[in-house]
Amino acid sequence: MAYFQSYTNTYAPIKKLEQLYKDALDFPEIVGLCIGTRPDCLNNDVLNLLSEINKDTYVSLEIGIESVYDKTLKWVNRGHDFKTTISAIERSANKGIHTSGHYILGFPTETIEEMLDSASILNSLPIDALKIHHLHIVKNTKLAKEFESKQFHLFTETEWVSFICDYLEILRSDIVIQRLVGDAQGDTLIAPHWKTQKTIILESILKEFFKRNTYQGIRSLFNSE
Image (cartoon, rainbow, N blue to C red):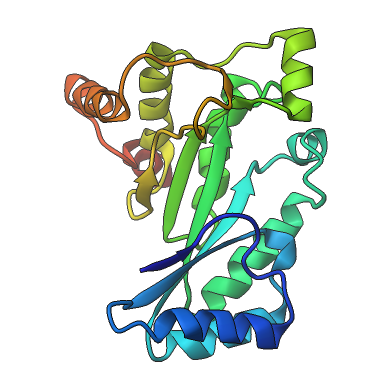
């Protein structure tokens, strides 16, 4: 897969985007495209282009959802509301494009109950996959200044394992989980500093599921009956 990951990879004139995507596909070992972008940078011309490419090769569109709550999107100065996200996801899915979402949990603007409720909201959207990250505080950002002044709570490793199992129990079972733990580049991370390797955290999540005798989607299944 050719992964257009960093920044907003649908934010350019349509001819330039077409050339970039096709240049990547000219490599014989490339069998598809994975394109990361923002909900407010997905006009219909871009989606039509991706739909045409999708007829001949695999295309996955990764949309930065980040939060389902407008208060949080405003707090992080996201520049769009959740209705914009819904529109982008629905238009992508309607074009038959594999649609993945990127989501952050741990914003101080949201209670634990609201974070858990967001899983039910995501369930109502036509997403195929989801990448979930815990909130990071990174150097030289406005969020870093906010954290330094208020020192709001961030998930610990133990809290994350328990919480994410709660979250996944609510999330639809057909949503493919592509990521459950994020990290920051190099020495840019201010907090939280988790000592456990990502692979061990993933093992802990699996062990917690076995301990509970539960699985992804079990609570959404019960709620639908």
